[in-house]
Length: 118
Image (cartoon, rainbow, N blue to C red):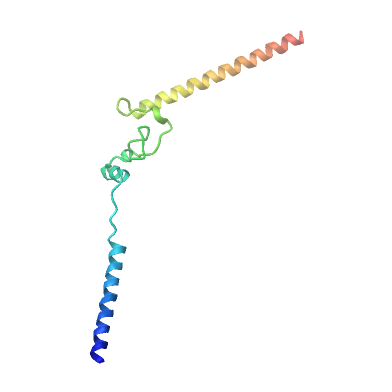
């Protein structure tokens, strides 16, 4: 009886160790295939934040932050400073045109009011 108890105890102990080892394998040996986004991140340059996969050509190449200029910036043929200057000039021209249009409308309303008074 004692020898049978020793054999059964050794068998149960081996079974518990096998279950523990299998549990260890399942929880720590997780192998996941690389997806396309992981491959892009791995190829990304640490010195160029704008090369991140979620960035586009309008982002500032030094900081990696989006610019106010939007999608029309092309870093292959123009500098960021030139694009910002062009954007600022366009914005000023648009503001000036809107101011002239507003002044013309005011003048037209005044002229119309003067004609009605006469």
